[in-house]
Image 1 (tube, rainbow, N blue to C red):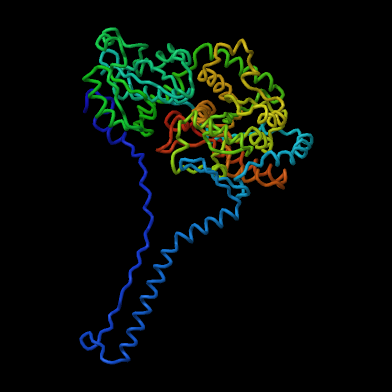
Image 2: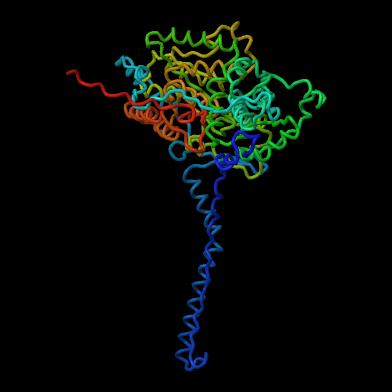
Amino acid sequence: MHGLSRLGNGCSNNGRVNLSSPSPPSSPRIRHSSRVKTLAGGGGVYNNNKQQGLGEKLVFLLFSIVFRRKGVLLLAPLLYIAGMLLFMGSFGFTVLDLGHGVEIVYRRGGPPGSVYRSPKVFKRLWPVMEADVNGTSHNALMAAWKPRVKSVWKPCISTNVSAAVSNSNGYFIIEANGGLNQQRLSICDAVAVAGLLNATLVIPIFHLNSVWRDSSKFGDIFDEDFFIYALSKNVNVVKELPKDVLERYNYNISSIVNLRLKAWSSPAYYLQKVLPQLLRLGAVRVAPFSNRLAHAVPANIQGLRCLANFEALRFAEPIRLLAEKMVNRMVTKSAQSGGKYVSVHLRFEMDMVAFSCCEYDFGEAEKLEMDLARERGWKGKFRRRGRVIRPGANRIDGKCPLTPLEVGMMLRGMGFNNSTLVYVAAGNIYKADKYMAPLRQMFPLLQTKDTLASPEELAPFKGHSSRLAALDYTVCLHSEVFVSTQGGNFPHFLIGHRRYLYKGHAETIKPDKRKLVQLLDKPNIRWDYFKKQMQDMLRHNDAKGVELRKPAASLYTFPMPDCMCKEPDPEPESDPA
């Protein structure tokens, strides 16, 4: 058994995960072969004119068939082009050539769901929606989730890993990049790797991201002392390298060797490739350290991930205190609904709209604005030769960010009435005055961090996107219902955290956007039919609230069964004698 590792010889088999998917099969090729049947007679010589005439006819027929097939193959490209032109014309395509081999394909008519017509549907249905609210006092907020007594889970973390102090194998240094929850992912995985390697973890360094532009350090976002204390029995963590180690590298951390690790590396890879370097050098660095540990690892290492994410990582005191005030204010404002409120993670910032390559107002100004935003943020990624942008196809496939209007219609259809207190977690909404107006019309009690906290309270956090995101995260965490609209690390971590806190149920709405865009593209849709579809969607989300982690899934989203234990079913009460 390897005396320096936490797993021994068996770890390489248990910890290895193969995330590579088989390559797609190549397109089948149709091979045409002609077989000429030899008409034999008299040693291969035709003996009479009758036989010769029949043979000539058969050979002629055979060559005619082959020629015709080859002719079809020669004409196939022309037929394909003609068919595409006919198809594009029948569905009203417009092809905009951006130059450099880049094209945008728009559908003027297009199949259902390919065009953003939600404002027209809302305008027609709004009087019916108002009348529907006035005629009922029911609010889905009061009974959004059906209790499931037999599916109760509780936090249950087991690590069986002791902290390395005097016998540490060396110092493990990582650089976390990205936004708040991408950094969170890196931190938790670094704790797991430090435990695996029997190493001492140095408080992670935060990389200044060109998109997030947040210069915050670890201690500005998370409670550094609590993090060290919470992990002290399992993984040794220090704030900085000791002086003697720094001296060896001329007090320059960038001089420490930077290991380039492949994504989703297995525990065996770390033990075989990283541990020898750590023992030889005494300190190793991984920058950037993002998605560098496989989902499938041994249970004790998985437990370290649970401990780091759900227990050790809590926000720094300034964030925590203001976030608690904001949650209390939301509870107070929603007193008529028992202190319950809905939170929505709205991804409708300009960079998200631009990246999605979706269209909303179909004007030339929007096209130009989005093209400039893509070029500014991704430097030519969307202008590569041969790139075809299909806004309609993206929308049908559910890849377009939901607008505030669409989120509002969905919630009203599910039964959340205009007395529901809604908190919107978001950055700077694209054309906020225009796009937020319908959502405020449907939910007049809507709140954001800017309405819930005073300018003086928010002043220390301005210009620091990760700290502002931490405020949003906390308010969403404690809501009765959380609505995820676009995916990303924020909802993935939040859904898992809510499962951890709320007995295994995510209490989250993840819209079926493919279905939603189809419904909102029907100009004559009836409100009662739309409501039924939305309520079915809510019931589906309720049923999917409790899910166990699958082998290739992340425990940060699915903490059962790695981080939680199922409570025994309650015994049925016996009837009194």
